[in-house]
Length: 243
Image 1 (cartoon, rainbow, N blue to C red):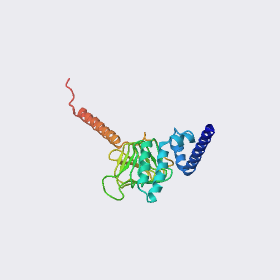
Image 2 (cartoon, rainbow, N blue to C red; image 1 turned 180 degrees about the vertical axis):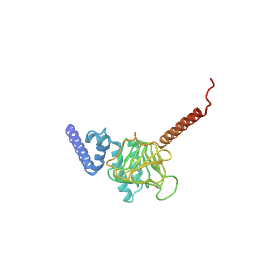
Image 3 (cartoon, rainbow, N blue to C red; image 1 turned 120 degrees about the vertical axis):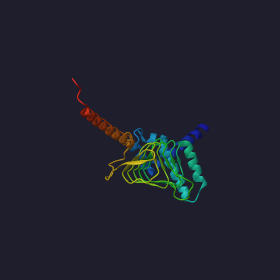
Image 4 (tube, rainbow, N blue to C red; image 1 turned 90 degrees about the vertical axis):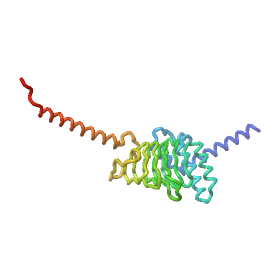
């Protein structure tokens, strides 16, 4: 009898797990699809559902955010507290996150209370969407649609990052960024603006422009040209050697 009860209990657990995974697959289809589109390590559905910490954090956030909008305060914070403990990703339940958002790896990601993230944005590990002081009200950034924020980047204050922009790894952004822009450096500098829409989500951070290196290279070319000119002048003004 005991073995039978254990068998029934185990069967019930498996059925419950299957129902939960099936519900997650339906309710979070867009986020799951984002995992496969933007993470080359994602190979099959069960692996993504069980091991993708970014997806887990988004699922926890959706539950906590719904409770927060329902007027609860402590329970949503507790949900996200345990979510941070499990995933390494800290999201305030009051933040606004669109559909199809993908958090890659995720360890150290912080999303503040009044942050807004548009659809299909991508955040890498160590990204902070934070405030700049203790002011009340809207104090965290608004991230547009299809924005890519590289590892370790900090986007601070009540600023707006335009749609289809790319924030380079470890950049610190404290000013508004127009659409279709590329931002690198500390503080963040806009190095490229494209009028046309990006054909797809760009994840290649190894070929972002470096404005400081480009400027230094330009200055070096100018110095070399001046040195060549001075050498030619000295040679032309030297008196001919006596026999």
